[in-house]
Image 1: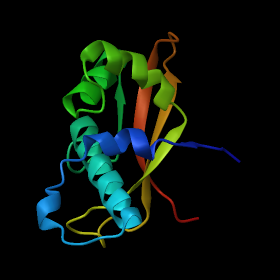
Image 2 (image 1 turned 180 degrees about the vertical axis):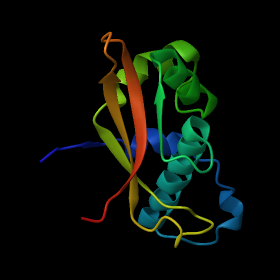
Image 3 (image 1 turned 45 degrees about the vertical axis):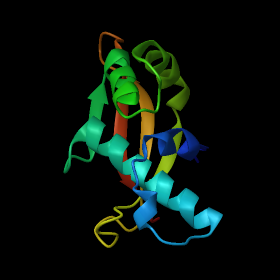
Amino acid sequence: MVVRKDISQIIAKASKLDESKMGYLTPEEWETKRVYDGANKFKRASMGQWKNKTVKTLEEIGTILYMTNIAPNLDKGIELAPTLVGGEVKYQSLRMPSLFPRYKLVIKEVQDHKEEKKYKIELLSSVK
């Protein structure tokens, strides 16, 4: 059994919700909306709209973390990237929740035959 760490709070920083149009929600509902929106922004920046996995270099992941406002600058993004390895965050489309009802974004460190390390980001079903 693989134990993954929850990186929801880190990924939620990418959220760009217009909260003035969201009405009244409990603190837990607000947090869930921010996490899902942040996960959507991170997924779109790293994989595009329809892909379900990608492999990126450390610099590419650092750039994505900076572009999505998860990291304040590129250097911090590069520094943060390795800490996300083994992490997962729940993923659900806010616009079409039935399209991705039970998924999660997972980040893994991988290497090729030359032992060059990269990072794999996958959208996996959380249904067993």
